[in-house]
Image (cartoon, rainbow, N blue to C red; front, side, top):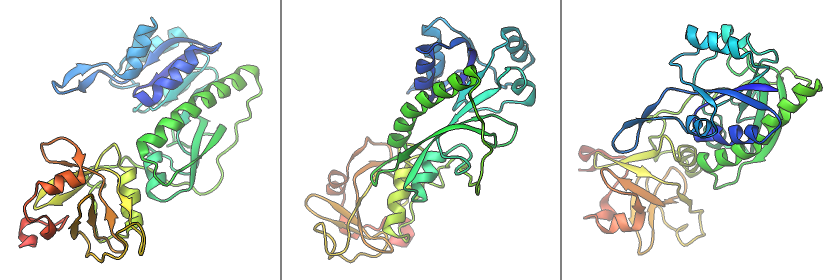
Length: 320
């Protein structure tokens, strides 16, 4: 089928490449406008725009899909279908009506669980054991359309949102092309979503603030869900400290289970740094002090004065 593909980040690149290698034809790509990137914050095209341009495909970069010029161009192209992956903008009814077979959205969850912008992050944070990818026909509602297909992926105990999303992008790309194949052959059988819907709004910097008076299991999931973005963090004497994934230290095991620490209390060992939680301590992995590079927590702690007196999450006044 003749397609117009919509997508923006690296997550969508695999789907575009898989589509370009298929029997379907990509006539144009719609992506978000160029955005500041890198240290110089110069405007740069999206990853999807770069791949499309290298393939000689027309690239449209509207500020809004409601742009009359973009709608006119879509009508002129007259695509049979419009696959969409992590585009990052709303598709109005005026655009939804253009492709004969509609817009096929690849979403990284098993719908109707985790509708919204951050399904992978919420699946990890809430302790789901499995997730997956779904293709569905886009409607005006938030991820409400009938499902064309889905694939299941287990969530590993050490998965970060970045690692899990990378795997889902691979299996999702194949699912997307398979769904388009079914539509082209007339064998597609869209099924209405069934079951209780849950929602996954975009995580904010405030969401990524670790509170040490939570159970170790919850802190572990929160940090992994926020890795790499928006990036988990805590306070050290009022300054922000970025946090990479932590190691669990169960009672009576792993060389630290006999340590009793109050929430946020730090114990610096020769090779590790333990932090107290509401339950068992956790072992810090990598950290990123304000204005510095990422480093191993033990290296960071060795450079601090009175490291054993530090309480993570405390302001300077609270630490006195």
